[in-house]
Image 1 (cartoon, rainbow, N blue to C red):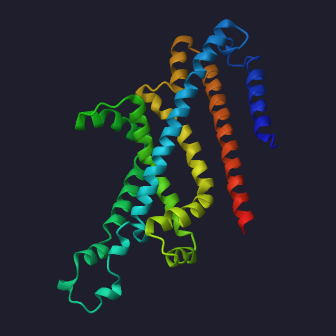
Image 2: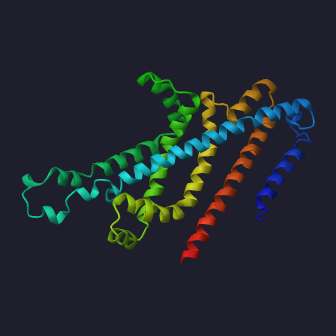
Image 3: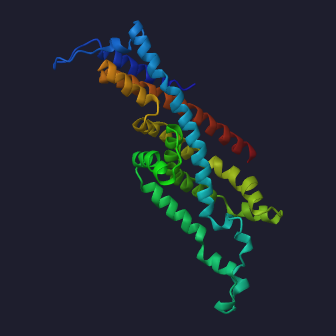
Length: 287
């Protein structure tokens, strides 16, 4: 068992505890009693801070699911060979020698590649928008433009998922394109339809290869969920901000917040690595 994350966590906690026992030369007095588990006041404050774990985890999981779905769809738009109507468009040799006026609408559509254009626009636009700006725009802009009232949770989930899906799309695209052409040709020789080829042959192999970057994106989503505090979502950062308003001990409270995110990210990283090893061992056993 790898004890390095546990050792790191204990080291940080010990450093924070030792720092609270001393005063620096500037005359600042530490007030760890506001988050001390040995006093009723500290226990109440710690319980209040821990209540943000549920919202943070739920937001991260919901955002990841939506982001992966959007990212896969956008990635497929950029891969015309996987588009549902790709094989409906005539091949170049079928239209060779025909006058331009006789070219079928499907042939012109295939040459224009509108789906690839949508893919590039989506990726470039939403990859360029800062996450905080997107959260504010979705929360305040969508109700104004469409009249649709969104809850704080849904607004945060949509904003983060839309921006993150642009990165997920590039990850999926790279993973799908990395699959050897022979695998696809073998699937077609068996008579598989395009979606069967994608679902049964390509995606299972691509997912094994893109698990590490997908795990990194999940960690990124979990950390960036703290921006949802600006619109009032009661996640970890919002709870720390609210407690600081009443206790006026920002350094101590935000030190606990750092430890909360550290524990959460270490747990996520642990399970992601286990998932990577599991998929990696399965692939090695099949060879």
